[in-house]
Length: 453
Picture (cartoon, rainbow, N blue to C red):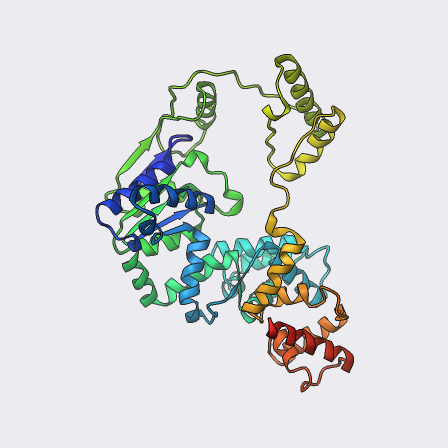
C-alpha cells in the first residue's frame, strides 16, 4: 500500500491510526515494524498509539529510525559478522578524527586529502553499498579519485574499515551497510526477521536511500505486507543519497499495490499551497495528486532577492524593526529561518546593529559539547575498551603526562602486535616498546583506573 501524502495532510496520523487499528484487530505488536526518519517522530507516534491501545502494548512495537532499529538488530546478530554485542557507534566527529589520524599516519598531504571530504566520500560509498573490495574492483571509482589527486583514497578506506572493526565500532553508515551484509550473507537471519515483521510501515519513503530500500525490500519479501507513506514533491535529500525512484517505482516493486492520496492540506494558507503547487508543476517525473486547502487565502508571499548575505541580513532586520513599530508587536512574535548555520552570522550582525535582541536555536547540540563527549568517552571505554577514538580522547584528559609521542608509539605497537591500544597498555610491562619506565607506570595506572571503574 502506498499513501501519497501532500504537505500538511496528516500523514503521521495516518501511520499512527493504521498501527493502532492493526493492534486492535489482534495483530501482535512484536510483528509490526515501523520505520521513521527521526526519533522525535517515533516517540510521538508511540505515545499516541499508547493512548489508544495502552502503553504496555505500545512498548513492544519495533518502532524507530532506520539507524536505531538496525542497530538493535546488529546488537543481537552482529556476532555473525564478527562484532561484539557492545560495539561502539561512532558519530561523524569520531569518524572524522579517525580518518584524520590515518591520513597523518600515512604521511599524506592533509590539504589534498581533506579529512571531511574523505569522510564524505567513504560515506557515499557505504550508502551505495560499495565495500572496500567492490571499490578496488571498480576502475571508474579509482580513476575518479586519481583525477581528484587522491589516488590513495582506497587505502584510507581500507585502513578506516579495518580500524573500526578492530576497535569493535561501527559508524552511522555501517548500521545500514552491515545490516544489508547480514541479511544477504545469512539466510537464516533474514528468515527470522521476515517471519517476525509481518507488517512493515515506512514513513518519508521519498527520502530512503538505496541501502535502506534494499533492507526494507528484503524484510518485506515474505508477506509483502508493506505500507509506505511519502510525497515525491517533498524529496530534498538527494545530496545525502536519497533516491526519489524508490517512491516513483514502488508500484513496479510489488504486486496489487493500493494507492491512497491525502490531498487536503490542514496547515497552510491558500496562497502558500497554490504557490507550492505551481512550482512543483514543473517537475518532470511526479506522482499525480492535487493538493488543496479549505483555509483562508492569507497574506501574499513576498520574495526578495538580495545580492549579498550582508544585504539580506539588513533587509530582514529592517523588516522586523518596521513591522514591530507599525503593528505594536513584541520581539518574540518574530522568527527567522535559515538554511545553513553559516548564514546566521550576517543575520546576527544586522540584528545587533538595530539593537534587536535574539536567541539562536540549534547551534551546538548537547551531545557535541566537549564536557559531555569527554564523559561519554569514559563510559564508552568501560563498555568497549577497544574503542580507540574514545581512548585517545581521554587518555590525557585530565592531564596525566601521556603525550602525543607516547600515543604514536602505542599506535605503532598495536599494529605490530595486532592488538588494540588498550590491550597493548594492559601488557605494557612485558612488551618491547620504546617508552620509558615513568610513562609505562602512568599507562599502567590509567589501565588500573579504567578496570576499577
